[in-house]
Image 1 (cartoon, helix red, strand yellow):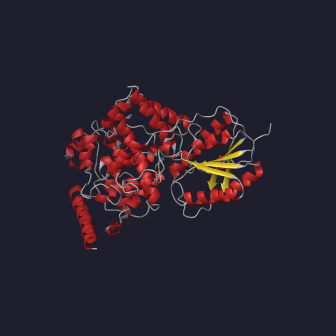
Image 2: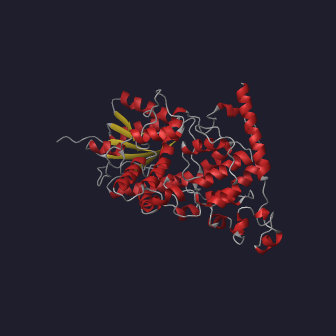
Image 3: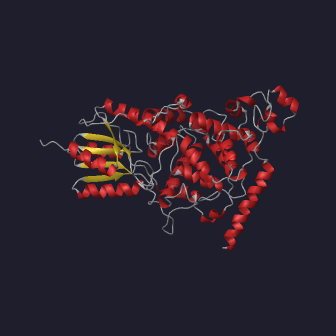
Length: 485
């Protein structure tokens, strides 16, 4: 019986064995499977990952390598231009096929298309698959035949059109051949001098097993209160916290969709709450549609009229915001949570982003860049789309006159005060009445709580009412200029 030649699987944002069409296709050929991750160099225009994402990727690759070794495989690590690394690996191993799962940003997708054409031109089989999204960005079309620019009709259309393919089981055994590999420790992705990642390590378990455990924990109760509790950062189990696992493909959206839908059908999950949760998965899908058709989503205004927006330049204000020193506890708590854990509750993300763009009148790109560096779930589509939504420059954007009041938002959503007290412990003795606006507390109350504004906790760097009016004037001016044009 003839022996099938090896097949290469090029892993990128799909670090899992279960429900992975690229590795399933390679196994189906019957020969050895060579699994490779390329630390890509020389890809012009590619955006380097931020520090928190590199921390996660380092741990995720370690976990994935262990999973492969447990079933007889090997994760080969190489550095270089993917268009050169892959042909070299083909030559070394005698592979006749190369498989991978698609990416949707630029310049990655153009590079992938060129590599596919080159490999096929050399007589090899080269195929790519969808493992990152429910549907390809170009598949779901409006009645006019274009792509969706508004989320609500997109969500309705997705529910009507999407039916998940049967799940692909994780392989229990892998035929493999050994290949030379670099050492992950040599890539320097774990921070040193200093190592600031202790808080990340305490909170997260990167890898496919960690993703599966996170999903099971969420489905075991919190999903049934999701519609109400998702806005409660003081509730530890209010959200799924699956975003970084999705970002690096340790779990796929189809796996989540199937699990939730099966639970609805079996009566385990309240349908209303469960569908609100799936709508958040759909926002991620919608963001990828925007990125596919707008490759500069992280840099350029989706709505070009915002090119006229009179953004300010204020390095000190930007630094105060980034360090959680604005004098507004809900904003500061969120920014400190981000720095310590690499993550921030979604409601607080909106409050903090609104504060930067509207209270401080600083460009959304500055905030997007900070989140890109500090978030473990810094997704090229969702991060940019969400910042543009908050700033008002994006698709289906928040109305320009919506300026989140960090005081009332804190009182409404940090109901117990537990969130602010955790991340701003210097305010922990302040009564609930003044917790979200310590600058409104009488001197004796501040003294009893051990607080001296300007020393133990900052005074507000802007006045809420004045900043709101300044923002509304700037947005109104931009809209008037747009109308004049």
